[in-house]
Image (cartoon, rainbow, N blue to C red):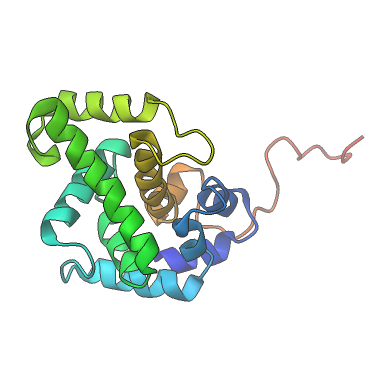
Length: 192
């Protein structure tokens, strides 16, 4: 089942609400996930595995690796190719912001370990992600910090993952568009 079908079947349910509403109101992924046609096109191209559309091959490999470390299973959910396809049709401003977030990951990797992200071992990658995720965010009206850039990158990854069938199943989606009854609400006399 493709992302479009999953999102269409979940519109208005808890799962779709999580996939979209967990992102900040201004996050570009939120805008993408609300457009089922865009999602279907990006998902089809990502599934075709024809290579990157917007990102360079090296950037895509970094995104694949980072996404898998942030959300195990992201590679199976085709998170990185899906994000790449969405970026290809995004605004230049959103593209620059994404590339800046990816560059912060590489820059912090080089600063801390004198090595690129992909060359780090698992422990170093986890330590770096932990440091980025626990650093101070920017104060209002101040330039974005490394944590802000990390959160932006994570938003793309989380949105792509939880809009996939794999991610939605992790949230409890069964493929049914509706439930005949909800657990805990099946007593014969109805609610009292």
